Image (tube, rainbow, N blue to C red; front, top):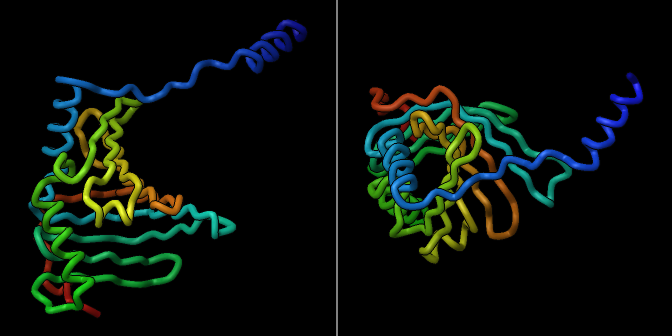
Length: 197
């Protein structure tokens, strides 16, 4: 009996099961997936969520992991607050004069959020069905976005289209994973959240 298990184990190593790879969606299936993701992730509202961010870089000996919370109010307010491992807060409020870099970032954020989470004016969009999720790859068409990212990948729940993770693949090869938890939409957010510290 032991010999039989040993033979089965050896065969399993020699002939591994095929990995389940994402299947590219086309036509109606692609259109339905995009519509579901856009409906579930309407950016023209307020959002509040917790996040875990993992940064992979060839320059780091180990991954850099941070946790915190974020808030957004369409079209002009963003708060990104890291709680661990070191506290920091980044706030953008379109009502502030701010510097030119923040104004440019605000314009880009407003353009992108106004068009929706997925838009084919600014990105080449490829949609995949994978076990337990939809994967949407966004390859920037605009030069300013292309200088920052080689690809942005959205991972969503296939039953609701709700966003679970965002993967930011940078031009230099670094990868940042942002995993969302406790996402709330359309909630009333205090203006105090968007005051610069």
